[in-house]
Amino acid sequence: MRRLLMHNPIAVATLWIVAYIALTLFPLLVLLLYPVPTGRGFWLEFSVALGFIGLAMMALQFVLTARVNRIESSYGIDILLQFHRYTSLVAFVMVLVHPLILFIIQPESLQLLNFPQAPWRARMAVLGTLAFLAMVVTTLWRKPLRIPYEPWRASHSILAVLAVGLGFGHAVGVGNYLGLFWKAVLWTGFMLVSLWLILYVRLVKPWMMTQKPYVVEEVIPQRGNVWTLALKPLGHDGFTFQPGQFAWLTLNITPFSMREHPFSMSSSGDRADRIEFGIKAIGDFTRRIKDVKPGTRAYLDGPYGVFTTERYWDSAGFVLIAGGVGITPIYSMLLTAAERKDDRPFLLIYSAPSWEEVTYREELEGLKEKLDLTLVYVLRQATEEWKGETGYVDRALLEKYIPLHRGSRQYFICAAPVMMDAVERALFELEVPVTHVHIEHFDLA
Amino acid sequence: MRYSIMLQLVTGITLILLGSAAVFAWIQNRTEPMELGQVPTSPEPKPDKQPHSSTRDPLPPLG
Image (tube, rainbow over all chains, first blue to last red; front, top):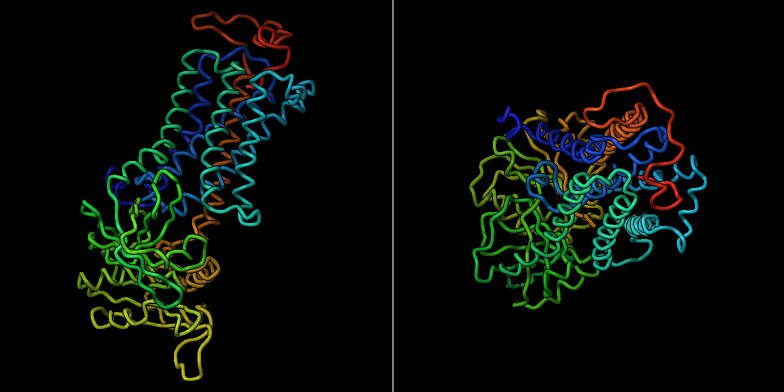
């Protein structure tokens, strides 16, 4: 059993889901012991249960976003963040339905919304719900509302602490279920663990990062408006990583500022003394990369991610599919494989806007001499002299190049979301086993 | 595709949580309260007022 849990990713992932449900329901089950006087009616109790489940789910969001390596390595951080988004919405609906039921079955309770005259327990509920609402609105519509990433991230944490704190204050204030001392102690412990996790991510981890600084060694322009940012560790050994992983980068400011950005490493995973990132100038932060001066102080939190060939050491070979700057983690995989003298076949299908914008073009051609590497460039705009593939990476193109024995390879896709969805669907239609397809979403924000 | 699988997963989890909330409400609403060691007796009429509400404020407690 232990062996199964350690080595079977599906078993590990299932275990975490069961743990999530148990952790969400445990605080509610605690309330069943030594029950309070009953007979208040089914719908009132149902409403109360929704409130407590919603609060527990909100508290558990801190676990999902705490970058716990053990959880993250079972799913990948992009999947965890998506799960965080979905479950937050479920929690929000539960928190909203909780008072709505009460208002329907006991219309006189609408007085609780009269803020100046309402008791503090009701005021806390209203304020907590408003904080939660603000969090949901600013997250779902951040781009249309033109909220920059960095202030959004800071306000997201503050609103989350407010929403959970006020929600808990409301439950304690009502006191119907948390009136018993030890029940309140258990729930307080649950809340303190959540608070500790956010303190760990926002204060403890940044402090640990300050103990291991890096400096910018050079910034190298690449094709396709991509810049290689090369860092070297300052006074420590740096870190090795599994090729394809990423790290959170803080540049030229203190890590306590919470203005960090996730980027895939593009260098060899075995070189701890020089860590490189391939960064495309597409946002406020990334457009400034080209102006970063050598010697600038940087901090890294990582490595993270499960988008790596390292986990499939017994695979017969790899099919790598990249679009634009999605080449970055894949280039790291190829570079590391070349340095390790990996003799397995690699097929790279690389979609780029034009021949001039094929990032790492010369380097990739150079790797053909060190690796069993087949390169297929797919250009969207090609000149008349171009003899290679054009258009999009679709089913017909994939069928032409991927091996007949589909399950003999592991497939890695890193591109814009639209291309990833199309390629994933095409691979599925071509009967590539779903467990052999790995995806990296690089737009985590 | 992975996100659609996860959407189904979150839907499943939500249904389990809603079911648990319903079971919680049913259990709480099913029997009269008993102290530990108390001998069960015949059902008594339900109190008109919430036990805690009268000591705190006139509005009904929610949680």
